[in-house]
Amino acid sequence: MTTTLKNTLLFFLLTIGCSLQAAEKPQKAAIASAHFMATEAGHRILAQGGNAFDAAIAVSSTLAVVEQHSSGIGGGAFWLLHRASDGKNVMIDGREMAPSKAHKDMYLDEKGEVNRDLALHGPLSAAIPGEIAGLDHLAQHYGKLPLSASLQPAIEAAENGFPAYARIIRHIERKKKILQRYPASMAIYLPNGKVPEVGDLIIQKDLAKTLKAVAKKGRKGFYEGKVAKKLVKANNADGGIWTLEDLKNYKVLEREPIYSEYNGKKLITASPPSSGGIAIATILNILSAWDLNSMDVSKRVHLIAEAMRRAYRDRSIYLGDSDYVDIPSKLLTHPYYAEGLRASISEIQATPSAILPGIGESPKGTDTTHFSIIDTEGNMVSATLTVNTGLASGFIAAGTGVLLNNEMDDFSAKPGEPNAYGLVGDQANAIEPGKRPLSSMSPTIVIGDDEVAVLGTPGGSRIITMVLLGILDFDAGNPPASWVALPRFHHQYLPDKIYAEKDAFTPEMIAALEKLGHTVQVHNGKWGNMHAVHWDKKTGTVQAASDPRNPMAKAEVK
Image 1 (tube, helix red, strand yellow):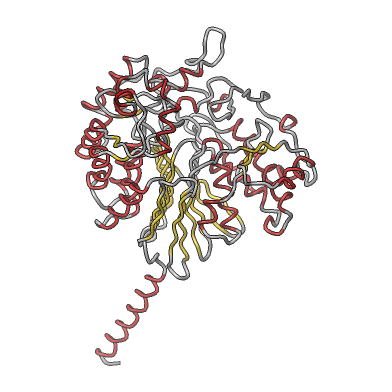
Image 2 (cartoon, one colour):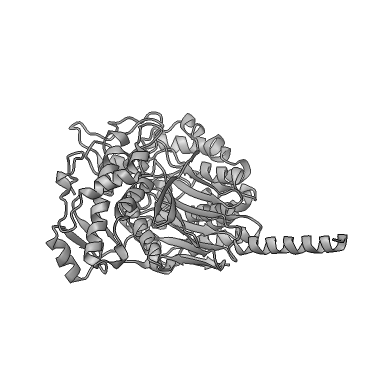
């Protein structure tokens, strides 16, 4: 064979190899988030040469400015990553941590009852934030661009302002009395003592300065130096217990995701201190024995609700921060364990939660955000971020623009006592210094032979079940626009009810479920704010979809 022929053949083989490789990558990038400015910020960073992880920094930080009722740099997040170059999957844990002076009885009054105001409002309700440390970690270890470049859209949004919209206005109205306690909060959310109207600019100069400090110095610009001193001073002045050492000692953790399978698809999802991954794996393992797509819809809902009931029962007993408690993760996610749970399910009768062994008490008596990204290299991010309840603690630390989370309420302040979302917990989730509170955030990636789904949602205790229903809809062959729009239902062990959105069940379905022994409670409100992307690996095409319940959301493919 001549040299020329060899070179021609080599060129041909290389061309074929490149073509095959290109066919295995998405043709375009897709981003779906809860606010159009955040989605646009992510695409702007991709256009500058960044990857999905750089875009995740831009989307996270922009949401922290324009969607503060749901997330912020005073809160935390889980970023679930898939890196295409080596197939690495990892969960970046930027969950908040309890301050060093925290203790298990810190919210109990003289009668031993939980003081809900202290647990939910003001600086004592705030754990040490993890979002900024997480963004710095993403830039240092996974991104291609400097942190300063990826933060620039958020800095501009804070400095120039963004138009107030209906959802954030509703949260300001609901939290008005709490916001009025704190001058720095009043200045941003209630200028001149009034709730903003639609279209009014919400400008946050102090927050822009804080983001600029982070852009210049990385995590040290937040956890040390002038910003840290202002945060601690403001926190302490109004009854908080933060110290400079608490901020300096905050650590981002890389955690192995929870892995499971369902109908031949690989599930990659959040690990503790999220309860979501284990719960979703447990539920899908239970349901794997039935062909849900072919059965009567009422029976299908019954079986799903029974699986939900058992997974949430386990959540209340076993789950917490795995650095502090021994969680039997392998047991809880094993098919044999699910087989035992499945054996306790009757196909013709609901199981009362009271007869399942648990913590023994019923409770008396939605906010967070999510985005999904796929870039043209096949890198993926499923990220759920939070400050806990709407507008969190209501407390902005003077001089920083930082709205502090109220994540301490996600601990179990007292065994059997429900938190703001009605979830109960036991000693595994008790308050301890440095511990991370149990979360329901469930960023998830599902990989099939020919397609990939990246999805997640906010929604407090209902996050897990909303993501579950999205996965089941994906498995049924429906597109992402269907996953995010599905009418939703939920069971969380206690209270012993199936909760449903208004359009989830027909009257006939409700009657059928009640005949099986379920109590069904229909809500007029809408739940969640799901954002998802899909990649068809056969064609390279991608789709993005945002929850139609949120008019500010934007899903875009570029």
